[in-house]
Image (cartoon, rainbow, N blue to C red):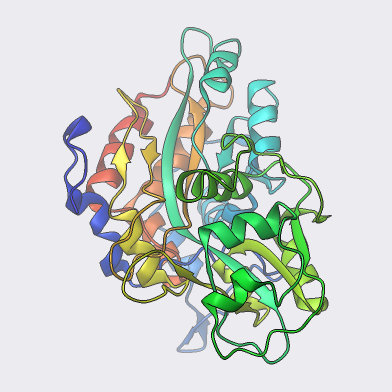
Length: 382
C-alpha cells in the first residue's frame, strides 16, 4: 500500500502507525481518566516528570475547547501535564461530541475543537467568519478503530459484513437469526429475538465515519448522507456519547452499536469481525486498524492535514472501520488573548513528549512525518 504523494508525505508516514502497537482510542469510555502513578524511591513519577519539560511559551489564563469524546481521555492527560508545568493556566475541554465542538468553534466560543472527522467545505466557509483573514484547519493528533460491539448470549464470535451492518442499523434486518446473519455465521446458535440497535443521539464524528464506511462499502444498502454527523436512519434507540451507547450495549441483551474500541474493551463487550472480502474475517484490533489506516491519502492542502481513509480496503488483516481525530484551529485570526496558550498547548500535544504520553496510555501516536508537519504548522498560527 502506498500513500498519496500529496504534500510530499510517504506511505511510511501513516504506515508507522503499525509499529506503535496500540491503535486504540482508549480516550473514550472510562469515567476515571487518571493513570496509576508509578512509585520510585517513594516519589510519584508519572506526568509530573513529563510536565517538567513543557515549554509554556507565554501561556496564561483560561483556554476553552470542546468536541470529540474519543479524545477526552487524551485531553485529560495532556491538560493534567500542561497545567502542572504552566502555573496559572487552565485548559477546559468539554467532550460534547465532534459536531458540538465544531459548532462552538464556528461560533467563536472555543479556541479549538476536537473532531473525529475533517471539516466539511461549508464548515470551513463558516469558520472564515471567526478566523479573521484565515480559516479553520485540520490538525490530526491520534487514530483508532471503531468497533461494532454487541451482547448476545451464546454468540462470542459474530461475523458481519458491510451490507448486514447497514441493514441492521437501517432497521431492515431486525432479527438475530435473519438469513443474512446466519449465512455469515454457520453453526452459530442465533436466537429468534429482536435486534436492539443503538446509535448516538449527539452529533458525532464517529457516526460520520461509520456512515462513510457503510456508504462506501455497501452503497446499495446505505443510501444516507455519508457526511452527516447526526444519525440519519430511522428506527433504533439513541444514547448520548460513546459512553452512552457502550453502557446501553453492556446492559441490554440482544443489543448492538458502534463505538471506539476502548469503550467495548472497558465494558468487556464482544465485538464483530468484519467480512471484507479478504481470506478471513477481520477482528477489531489496534494492529488490524493500523493496516487500514496505512492506506490513507492526504487530501488537505497547505496547512490543512486532513486525511482520506480507505473504507473499502480488502487487504489481508485490515480492519476497515477507522477514524482519525483532529484538533481544529484557525490558521489566522485567533484571539490575541488566547493565542499564546493555544500555540503552547498544541505544541505540547504534538511534541514527542506529548505523543509519548499517548503511547504510554495505549493510544496511537502520530506517524513521524505527519507529526513533523503538524509541529511545523502550530507555531505559524496567528
